[in-house]
Image (cartoon, rainbow over all chains, first blue to last red; front, side):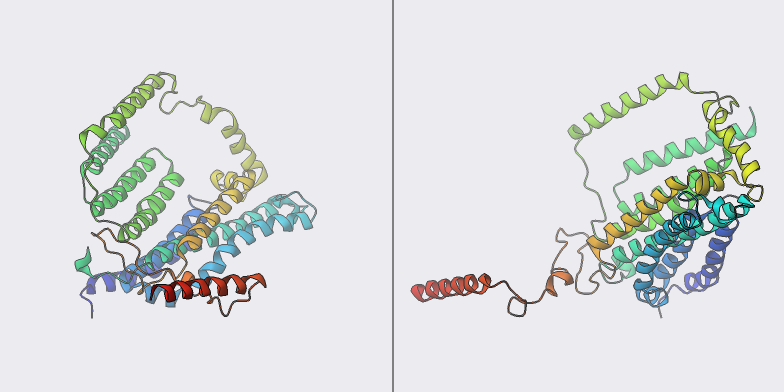
Length: 146
Length: 233
C-alpha cells in the first residue's frame, strides 16, 4: 500500500464529480460559459488525475489507449460529418439551419450540439493521448525520484 | 478608485512577482508549479475583467493540463536548469527592454478601459449580439453561437489543429511509449538507451521480402567480410 491515503480517498470522491462537471460545462455551454473545449479539457483532467494518483497502468485499464486513438479521430469526423450532413440536406458546409428549414433556429441548436460533441471528443482524447505518450516513456517514479 | 480596479492591479502585481520568481529559479519543478500559479492568477484576473469564457479556458488548459504536460516532459529531462552566464543575458535583456518601451509607446493609442465605443465593442461584436438574439433565441450565450455557428469554420480548423498536434505527439512518442524497457536518467546526460520498440520489431532481412537484386549485394558484402576476416586471421 502506498502512503498517499488521503490523496487516494479524496481523489476517488473528486474524479466522478470532475467528470460530471465536464458534461455540465459541455451541455450548459448554450447558456453559460463553457463548451466543447473546456469540457474536453476538464474530462481529460479527470483521467489525468486518476493516472497521477493510481498510476498510469490503472488509467490505461480504465480508458484504454485504443479508445483514445479512436476518440481523437471520431471527434474530427463528428465535426466534419456535421458539415457533410448539412450538404446532404441541401445547405452549405456547416449551415445548420438547413436541418430544419421551417425553424432554422432549431437546426442551428442541433448543429451546435453535434459540433460541440465533436470538439469534446477530439480535445479530451488528444489531451489524454499526449499525457499517455509522455507518461509511458518511463516506468512510474517513486517519491524519492523527485 | 473602484474596488475592481484595485483587484485588477493586485492581480497584475502578483503576475509580475510570479514572473520574476520563474526567471530567478533554477529548479524546473518549482518553475512548472509557478507557471500553473501564473495561469491561475491570470484566470482570476480574467474573471475580474468579466471574460469568464477566457478565464475558464485559462484555468483548465493553462493551470491544469499544461502544468501536467510540462511535468511529464520534465520527467524525461533534467530537474535543474543550467545557469546562463551574464554575458549571454545582455542581448535578451536589450530586446525585452526595447519591446517593453514599444508597448508603453503604443499604450497611448489603446482605447480607454471599459470604453463602449472601442473597436472591439463597436462593429462586428454588436452585430453578432444582435444576430444571435434574432437567429437563435434558444441560445443566449453569444460566445457559443459565434464559436460554433458564425465562426464554425474556424472552430473546425481548431479541432483539426488539436487533432494534428495529438497525432504528431503519437507519431513521435507512440501511445504506449516503451515503458519499462527505456529509462531516463533525470540528472544525468544519457537519455536514450535501447532503440524504440518500433525499430526493434522490424523484421530481420532474412524474413523480409526483398527485391531480386538485394540478396546478391548482401551475399557479396558477406563474402567480402568473410574474405577480409580470413585475410586478417
